[in-house]
Length: 464
Image (cartoon, rainbow, N blue to C red; front, side):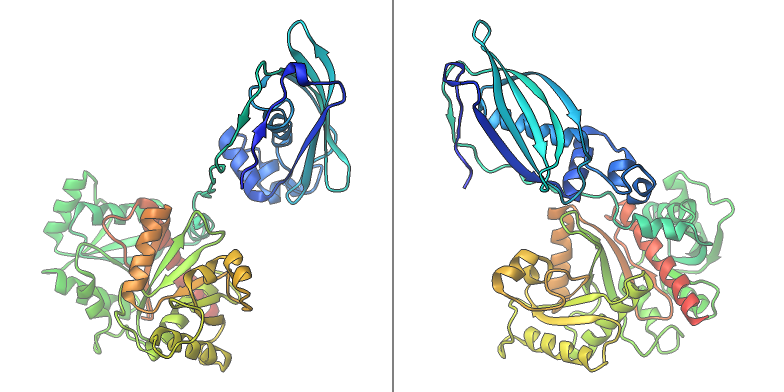
């Protein structure tokens, strides 16, 4: 419950009156202060930069600590109605992430003719060391105020592009060749131009040349220097792309302006040469502002009602990608509506079976646990409240959903309600397939291409 705020008017104040407030500072507090103030000094935000600085680590902004002094003045002493007139500050020690700071104020001077009050300020850390000292000058309230504030707004830090490190890694590597299948619309042409200009891939445009050039005209871009593989129609474009990929002429397939089923039908054809022993599956690589790390949701686009064997492949495909991206042992939460096995809920039975399969080596390279409800999978607070003991719960890297409908709704809710960006890839074939929507923003298309490129190159490095 939010504390009621009561002020002290000038006539109620006495020399020696004291008040204090204690707050802890974490990395998110530092990021939020940087976003609000515009102070993006790398000493506060970049661990590598700060390592060479005088303190050897990132530190909180000095004015974050000074802000605690302002908070005491406005909420405790003198309290609501106080007008801040001036502040003298001396910073004594750095404040680092994890510190708990107590701001203490004491009335040292009362100026009756002007209602001005001078207060001594001192801020100390959890060791009792002084990090800030100084004094504040305020205009005290004239009339008593009792205020019942509502809860503070909840701030969510959206770190711009958790996939940015993947994109930067991909840019630093030599381009791979991508077949853009049937790029006969403005959006598909612009997608090909974007990945080329980002230095991610060398696109080959596969489809009816006349329609491709018409799309480029509509987009107002030049195709000079781009290779066009002319085909009669979209079916032929999909077949030609698969043939070129099977021969090693292209390393990634990118869906253009044809239906997903048309492209994937050619990919899984028994005669196409791209099938593996695995079932193909789709992953959404999610950048969710409210979650502290990249998150994969699978399968939300291909396998409608996957069997237990299908889910094993879906899980392994996602795990293999995460490992290629640098995760040594991804944590897979097998989702259901509840976190206990219930024989009337098939998703919980599959989840329990997959957990055992992982323990026995039928799924490799990951920690797998289920059934877990969505909150148990991603919220440490929920896990603590329910007393769940699990190496995965509360910190999942991969969410394995019960079926396509559940996965698709979950992913779309995160995109539209939580401001998430979603990269889309199809895995399980001999080459990765970039599968994005015309409605996807540029950031999603670039992230999808970057993940596909890294998967190709890292897999080749591992084999070689």
